[in-house]
Every structure is written in C-alpha cells, then in structure tokens.
Image 1 (cartoon, rainbow, N blue to C red):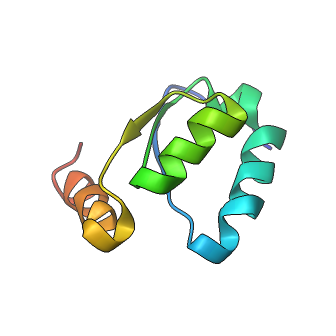
Image 2 (cartoon, rainbow, N blue to C red; image 1 turned 90 degrees about the vertical axis):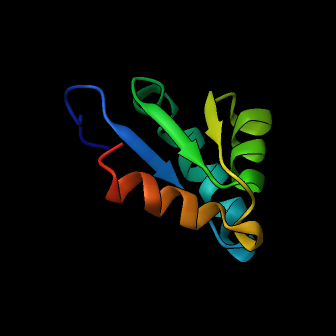
Image 3 (cartoon, rainbow, N blue to C red; image 1 turned 180 degrees about the vertical axis):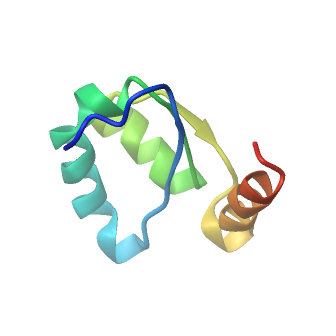
Length: 78
C-alpha cells in the first residue's frame, strides 16, 4: 500500500459476502490504517476491531442506515 500522508478519515464498508476479504486486506495494511481515523458500518467495524485490532468509529449496520450515516458525514465535510 502506498503511504497516504497526513492523517485522513477513512470509511470502511463491506458487503456481507466481502467481509472476509476486507478483513484480510485490513490485516495486510494494518500498519498504514492505524495512522488514520477509521469509521465503518456496524458489523464491518465490529469485525475489524475484533479480528484485526483496529480502532473504529462505529455507525449503524448497513440495513439500519450506517452507509447513509457515512454518506451524510462526507456531505457535511466531516
């Protein structure tokens, strides 16, 4: 993974069928991801915290509007 530079806010979202691949990718890139503020939908965040050890800001699960919460943060410049 290329170095991103200054601290960024990064949202991590994965469809149920892709969560294992997201976890594997996050493990491979953990050192870089830890330098940034991370958020994600509920289930994805919980898995990334428990299986990878990343600190996540949790939104609601996708079916309950978590992806919409993240979209709102983006549109508000957060």
